Length: 477
Image (tube, rainbow, N blue to C red; front, side):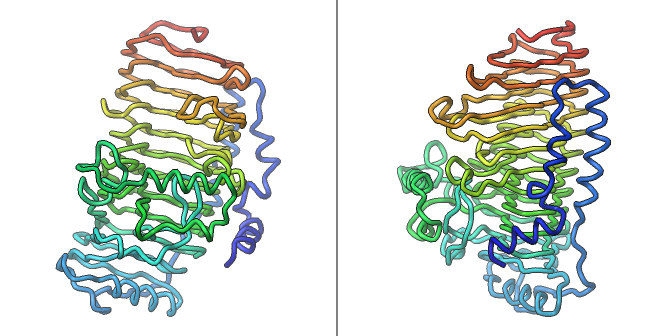
């Protein structure tokens, strides 16, 4: 389906909340929050979101990958076997493509509607280190900007009812010699080619409004592919698998509706190795996952600068619960590619703990991105230790005030948070002409804090039973 048809179907389906939920948005705009107000929001809104998030169900048909010529010896190229098995499953009306025990080497895998890629225990899909295996280029999004680039390792475009499930492993085979050096800097063992020139060229094209069809990269360029990217898809499930060693972002649904990410384990410490980055998506559930990453564990996104404003699609109606975060830049992050905005984020019952985790709860924005970030709710959060701050809301990220677009954060609510060790409890920095508004903290206990909080340009702070190093505080200094 084309983009216009996809958006029309999204609105008609009832899951395109941005296209039909202005009353819902208004209901969350509370000027003077109380405990009762916050509880009403959780009780009223979260069940409505969950009622719309329904994982796809597949026909009881199995297509064993080995029947299509695949050999699980870790050496035989199984790319064509995956293509044939997925095509057969799709033609039959759907079912599961079964990856049995063994190690199956492949290039890009493209999912189709009504197909579940299911990895049995002891099954590994190992992705080729040869960039040519991810050509021809596909329509994708890279750091918040649309383009034609290398295919993500597992990709789907404008499909419905797709899944990746099972107890097996997805191995990206990225390391200091493959994919990661394209970042440049410390990851590069030599002064070889890297992404810097291409990254700048892509961003410049987006600012000039160059059509996406002419933003062609891929062969001869060095913009790393993502690991898993469903693009403009509906009814997506990713469940149970372990993901290792990605080129960059791991799970990256874009412009999708009805997405469930459940029970996934991600261990990948490469550059920009975010764990799960829903971008411009509606109705997303991320639950019971484990993240040990080289960048943000979870990052909510909605496009970068001019390209994000062109698409005008926020990320919204997102529930994150029962997740554990270890290493990373941020545990639950909003931004920085956030120009389309974000609204209605609910995070509960998560544990974050590592000396190599910089921030627990984080917002990254600036005057180049802009975007309205509102109705962000957190409760029952356990933080063992973080390296910088437990809660960071920063408008000075990267470009800071060097832009003409006003960043907005309003209605940021944290309840029942406990932390054990950090440099700062809070690092909250708005702009003088764009203060952070309506920050509500209740029943929060920040222990082992080394330095006074950083608080600049914040309006409308409510503190109820907030302690820092055992001392009850009634204002932020």
